[in-house]
Image 1 (tube, rainbow, N blue to C red):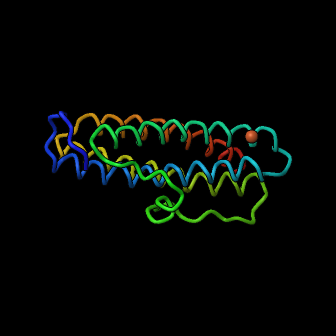
Image 2: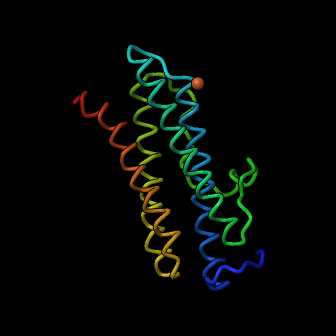
Length: 160
Ligand SMILES: [Fe+2]
């Protein structure tokens, strides 16, 4: 960990960096899953889903940058290489052979919900560390993730 004039304790910073790097790996993995769906989706709702999945990837990409830069602001090293992501991700593996639009929506909804749940858990963890800014960051991430989950689930509810 790098020295910094930031007044958070070294212990809190180390724990917040660990927490943030875990969510960073997940966000990078999730963003790639959304891109995979964007590229490979087929079916009658192709263009709407193709665009929806790209917007989802874009939002996740914003989280990636915000999370990574909080890691470095706290004196850590952001685990942004593919190798680091493969070692650290906790996102379930994406079903690589699906093509149907709703199958992609289902797969992404599951992954997005999992990501949102873990971001929310991190809010409490960051608060316990006295790191209100990381808690706020994860609050923003989870709020936007809830919205993206709604966008996905709205397609599934319409079918029932
Ligand atoms: Fe594209």
